[in-house]
Length: 185
DNA sequence: ATCCCAATAT
DNA sequence: AATATTGGGA
Image: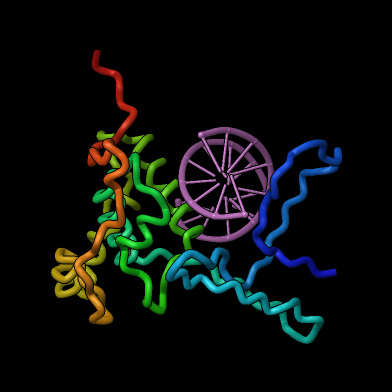
């Protein structure tokens, strides 16, 4: 029986759970999430192919240096410790792109990003994250793109001057440095 | 109910 | 190692 990895995870109430748990499964075709004005993450469950399909490979999201750069800029704009997945997605301008990370993709990546910052914080940096965009510039596909990214323009031409939603509510828009750093006393 | 984070699994 | 998935909290 196929199960549909929909995404209602936990629906209120948390009383008593069967003692049986510890099952992991993976299987997804579409992305998750799709709502909220302008959401495009469609959840088109294709139904489990009964048979005949030669086990399609699931495509994992590949974070390209460029996507990574957009991600980084968005995160830094909001402040590393305060960057939230949905805000990041908006600031990235990935909407409308053919290759757009889903909120969950961003979430996962954001975690990794914070982790790399946390465990190195300010000292040495790993070759992967530290030099991710260096490869972009060296690749040659950056040159002009890098310049565009400086101003943050969408390759589609639909560049709107990033309008930050509303962060005014919080008085802590302050950010730009790694939070949680208290060693020097 | 929705969103996000951290842990965990693959 | 990088990404996805899951569990739990706000």
